[in-house]
Amino acid sequence: MKSLAEEKQALRREIRSLRRGFVMAGGLPDIALPALLERRIAKGTVIAAYLPMRFEADPGPLAQRARELGARIALPYIETPAVPMRFLEWTPGDETEVNNHAIRQPLRHAEELVPDIILTPLLAFDDALHRLGQGRGYYDRAFAHFGNALRVGVAWSIQEVPAVPVESWDEPLDAVVTERGLFSKAAL
Image (cartoon, rainbow, N blue to C red; front, side):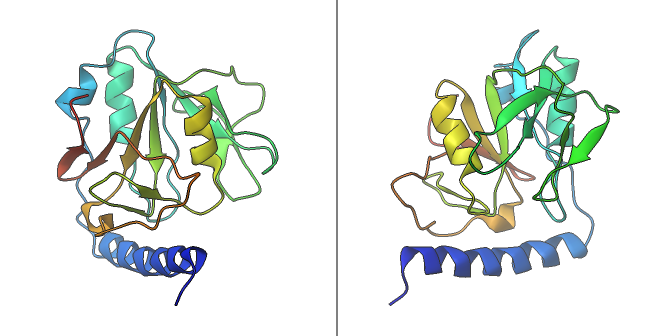
């Protein structure tokens, strides 16, 4: 019998392969900002997005629409695993640096912002809106720290699975946005 950690690792391998094949097949539609989320954005709303790594769903079109509605965009900034992830202001065209996880992030002197909505990458999600991430816990800790922020996963629909293995520290999402629309448990 596999441990929970082994189940998560096996699911990560499976979904990475599935996601890679999906993206390599091409013809990917943009993921649009759903009307229910759009209504929550006003001038000054802070949206934490991310710059996608290879094969991740791109939140760029969602962030761009949010900017058109007056939102400020922040990206995650990671120093070390011991230091909580922060969100620093970013505008398309701003210079970035690459951290120890090969993730592009704002330069350290950018203004730190408190997110109202956190757009988060993920490997897998289920209909209970549990999220399987890369396994480092940065987003789970950020969700706990920014408890009032709306947590929205961004993924391809093929990343939905029947059940995500969940541990006590895993924080659920409020919604997931895919190329097929919005998945949420309750009205946003």
